[in-house]
Length: 491
Image (tube, rainbow, N blue to C red; front, side, top):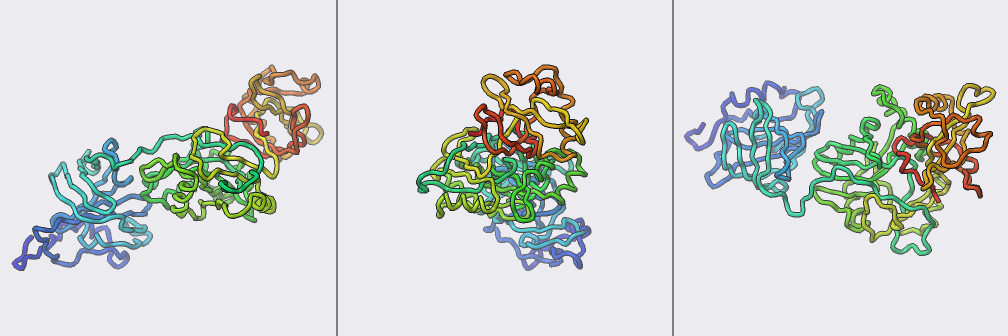
């Protein structure tokens, strides 16, 4: 209401809901107790603010100045940038005008507890303001253009961008196949190459949008329920959208990746067990490439530019990190460091190369300190002596043009619990005939229990024998992130 001096007062009723939810003795939020506010000149536009709110669920509070208060909506996914996609806008209580400058932490236990920062602010033009439609044109640093809000029920509204998407905007792809490395040797010259350590973990692509995270293996199996800590990276990135390529690893007490520890988490489905393992066997996501950022695909950019963009995200936390990319040290020295630290090896990447989804090319080369091989289980033999009645060894194969090629058996590297778990998984896959493309020796056949070749594992071994078998293989663990048709023989 207007006063004689030209200022306006806010009706107490407008903020009654807001004040009822907050205790001024416990929260730093403004209560709107100032009775009058400066009059808005006709030449001035009303203001808006968007606040990033790290509450129990990350969201963005969209507030428009109107009649002495900030009319407010909570946007779980932020402002839409594409007119083809509408976002939910939950209508909440009006806030005092002073709230437009509020940044800080609402204490735990209070309504809306969490950290609040101003994501953007500015002025706006009003094109329509009705009980069932609000149309405005935003003039902010990050938020610009024409938007309309409309209700779908008493509480829930939708917000729609009416202007075209910004220039060069591209929707985030739903799934991208990761680029793969070829096995090889160190280059003779270091110029033009970047060196990264090879992490002994599970390859994963993370899709982060509006604080929400989707995580998938290279064969599109979801990982988020298995590794709930991956959600942390969404909270770190906030409103930013990104597709990250990297590796999920489990580190030992000396900071070295341990695949055996990680594999224990891959095979767990119980929510309570996952929650326990999250603390007893924590995992960390190591991001080593960036394919999409804030509405723009950057896969076509050279490695150096993608790497610069990745490092600008400052991904360093308890459950995520950006491992180093080394360009100032000779590859042989990097390999020595990897060997001294007990790492699997290095991956070498051409600095001028683009990201090629789903391809395996010489632009990425992996050089290992010790040999590992993914294998498909084609059968098993029974144990003897103290292992009588249990699993003795696994019969292993690698897919080829002729079928599943037998490459030997592995009988070491198992714990008693692992043997029991493997038998439980293999029992439903039993078959009478061999799955291998060539018959086994009569001795092997007589002892074998054959299975359908669908389960993938990994072994460490000394070398390949002349007849194509694994010498001295040791079991490392199941690879539930891989399918049998993805397994290839490592040269």
